[in-house]
Image 1 (cartoon, rainbow, N blue to C red):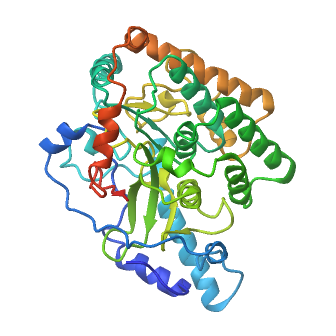
Image 2 (cartoon, helix red, strand yellow):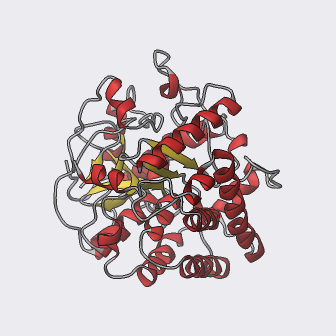
Length: 419
């Protein structure tokens, strides 16, 4: 149900309180393919969003969830917003293993970890071998997909990964890809038809702006400017159906407090940019607002409920993370990350700092190079490089056709693919 009018702080607090006993961030299960999902108990369908176009840009700028300034009911609203924001960050605490442990002990496999993969509970070498075998089968069948985690300003790593895998012939025109936050940017840019050199130049432009003028509370406007200048007018047609953008829906009357959703169809360039800005909307940090309006309802960063999403048409998803995955306790098996194939000099805390404030130019260039090196190492180790060189893929067209078959479907972990 779309929220209308101005939402006061007391209303926000009341909505959150009514769900206090049961509302948690949806558990994102593993990225198993359609066959595996069919074999599990079917999840209850979540009603789709109400259709309709984007609200005017000036309406988006006046979010009623902006931080309040002072006293009385406004102060109450600020307190409620702060309490809600604390709950939202619980998923990030679970990533590093420092937060509350996962509940729901009756779950098994991927369900026992809110962010883990189906291979999370087995030996790392066995997990890598199983993932590689599944990747080869999916590649040969044209149903291999890629998922990119949230990562903030570590985005250059993803540019290197996509550039290398595209040149190797592993990521192809029809390959479905999904991303959250920074991951959503790379999957959209990769499908835009733009050269990677142009995308990289835009990334450096954003970093230069933030270094010179600051990042906190203004990253949102800077990112929107860069996207509007970068993306071509017909970009929505290029990305729809094979690009999946993770967003988090807030305060849904007909469902849980936080709803992970995947958006795969876009009405135009403005709609795509709105989806990307929503996926990247770190509460408060991005532009001072707790949430942003997207298609008539409040949303924010997709990485909060779906840290590393999977494209639903894929039978197997290659999981890519720009953070050092061996230092993250809840991610489960990751195929490509900075510390999987070679030593990595930065600790997790240093990487998180670079995710929120742009690193120096030399470090950003190093991230691009490392993304290429890590993805090439994965391609060799998994056997995909040799398979691609031999022309052993169906090209991914089956995956794209499957992605367009249904406008709305429930996906693993409760997310919804939106038209």
